[in-house]
Length: 164
Length: 418
Image: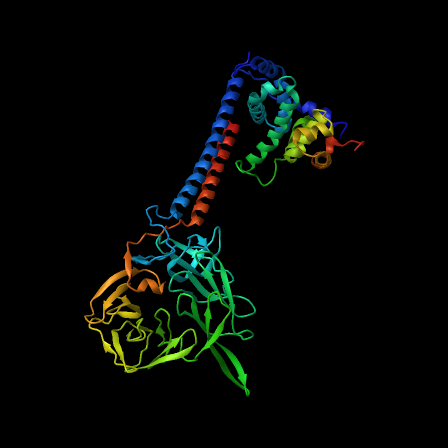
């Protein structure tokens, strides 16, 4: 099939197989169900025109679009969403660990959050993280260092670790 | 934390929303892509159309009237029946061709910002094309004198030494004539005494016997020749000076006129006047008739007289007191004068009857080439181009681009949020 719909089947197979994983990453990047769905939706829409070129190994390209879109969207949203003077309180206690981590991640800069998610959730190397976000390796390192320090500061009770 | 963080992130990712159906994503992605291509094409098309439209409109506004007659560098010069106020956005050139008139003290605007004061606009003979004239090395605020044949412009040059520059407006070539070296000149005057002879007068401060005084000298220059010779001192170029006919240099006090041989500087005729002349007067080519306008600060009557035995009895010309200056003799019985009513016009006046014929309307202070005033021929005026003010065009283009960019931004982000 060489028409405009060539590759559609492969694309839909990829979406069916990888969409849950993309949603998990997107949720870590956005901290919200709606935003995660929106981010994945936008990422996949942006991937369609390039599908024929990336069909053999779509994962790196899709991850790159997802990561960069999460940073770009946050920039675009800053002026459209009303800012509050302070972020919501981060709940503490062992039963609220997920909420606490989500709150702490939400208070990182978008790029710090993306670096931590790609490095420690997607388990990418520094080189792959830099390539995915379009930044230098040095910037990846500094964002990772600063992001971790900020997390320690925001959630010291349940993120303490002797190895830090 | 680095050992705990992956585990905690995986735990948090378990809260991610459940998978949705991918139905329609492919077509939605293709539609989105087409929309973006169309939007980009529309933006590019709009920018290209805007730029092309502005460029074409600007070109059309600067283009001379295609129906205008061609420029002429020889033959009789016709006077346009109207001289227009020049646009500050006219183009510049150092080779406008033979000029029928110049307008001094015009402000030229530059793109994107800035302006130059005291520029000179030339009106080409024949084509009547208006353009700013680039005067190389011109001293700041130097007067400019247009040769009677319209081929040269004379002006003082900038620089540590004193020099007069003569620009050939048909070739753009500048001829330099050093004069009065070493003096700090104060008042400097230039006056053409023929198609290729130029009279120069200047003064400078002198301290003599602990008193401040002034040195003064008048010189004659000849084009294409390094020869400089002195002219008699006097009131050569102040009030009461006499406009020279072709080939003669004239000097006068307010009660007398001396006719000079410009080649030697020798006075060849002394003419006394029956009354003081407050304004520039005109001597005819035969040096037998003098005409002038009376009154100093407002229009006055014309006076005219014939030279008899070295004396002239000046008598008023019949008619109203609306004359600002006499520019020259058109023929033996007519003078060309500036007449001021609601506006200024160039008229030919019969010195016996006082009847006048309007030659041209002057919307600006023009200096007309001397030859054009002799037996004047009038041509229909060609309206000069009125180039657009490019600053608003530039500003509006930027606003339009910004609005386009803003629109694209809004469309893009509103679709992302959908």
